Amino acid sequence: MTRMERIPDGPGAAGDPSALYQDLSTLYEEMIDSVYGFAVTRVGRSDAEEIAAEVFCAAAAAYRAGRSVEVTPAWLMTVARNKVIDRWRSTAIRSSKLHLLRPQVPDHNVWASNDTSWRVVDALDRLDDLSRTVLVLRYVEGHTVPEIAHRLGRSTKATNSVLGRARKKLQRAYERAGVDDGRA
Image (cartoon, rainbow, N blue to C red; front, side, top):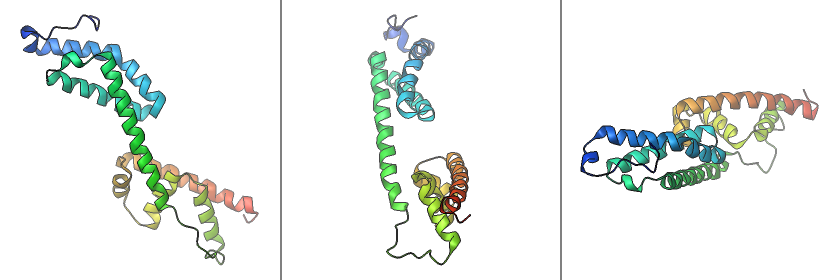
């Protein structure tokens, strides 16, 4: 059955859940690659999987609400585009707030007396914003991983992964800070 040979929304189909399932199943099979492909080129794999799931959940909701005639391939791609834009906006908002957690450079050098401290600050400055943020939240401000996850709008598992990668990046940057300055 192709998308054009839709199951009618007449009285026989309205009460037949198997007919509804078959149509949604066909729609999914025909469009999942297009929806996922569209999203993955714009937001990456993990977010694309979530977006594809959200798009087909919206299609199922439209079917349940009796609006199955609206659900076309163009409708699915429009929903996917809107979900991608929403993801971009939320990422931009989160990114714009990350700078608030970045330590400000003081007017005088408070680290001059402690050789190790300047290397830590230098290493932190070499990290990307997200890595620096999770490290500061965890080890400077003392937040728990679930608190950090909630604050960043991520899952606890994802935040643990980010934190582990950030520790490794900090270690490498710390080692480079001493080598680059000739103090290691």
